[in-house]
Amino acid sequence: MKKDIIIAIDGHSSTGKSTLAKEIAKALNYIYIDTGAMYRAVAYYALQNNLISDQHFDKAQLIKDLDQIHIDFKYNKDKGFAEVYLNGQNIEKEIRQMTVSNFVSEIAAVPEVREKLVAQQRKIGQSKGIVMDGRDIGSVVFPEAELKVFMTASPEVRAKRRFLELLDQNEDVSYKAVLENVQKRDKIDSERSTSPLIKTEDAIIIDNSNLTRIQQFEKLLNLAKKKLKS
Image (tube, rainbow, N blue to C red):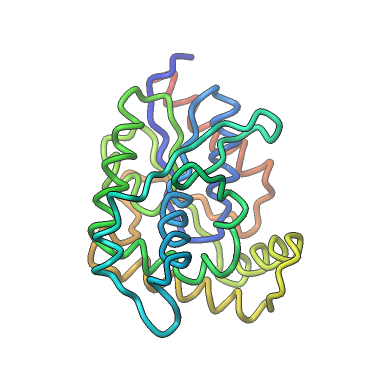
């Protein structure tokens, strides 16, 4: 197989896009890029610098600070995937916490933030041979991607999965709070004016509400192999 295609995985929050993308990238020996982590990194920066909270959001200052926000991915051989670094600091664990999840969709809705990160994402994908997941990969970042997938599942199923993940991380959170967060993010992601979450006409839907990780992996791997052969 030649490393000559881009696999774009879009979809709702907590559908397991990142997990599936990592597994497919490893199987194909492709590069995996977690674009959601990039927006989480910006949200983490905003929280650390008191630019966003439940009471306020200083968009103007965040936009001014964008040139000071440097996001990198560094491969961790022991863990088997690339971790996220913000201005030289490993923040892989911090950006997965509920406090960041509560604000990431608001951050991602800022046009200037999207413009900066989309430019980085396109640069990374120039050589192809990549798997990239997010909200607008197939519609905005790589509309020419050879394989586009749109992942979805019911809000209740996604909330339960996310809730169990957070419990494993010793987060003090309720299922109700997680469900509300999932529903809130769906609304913001789908209704924002800049690059809203949409399913492109050429994207293949994978509803994993009742699929195991192995089943969805095999489904996507078969789709990728067909594209590579053609």
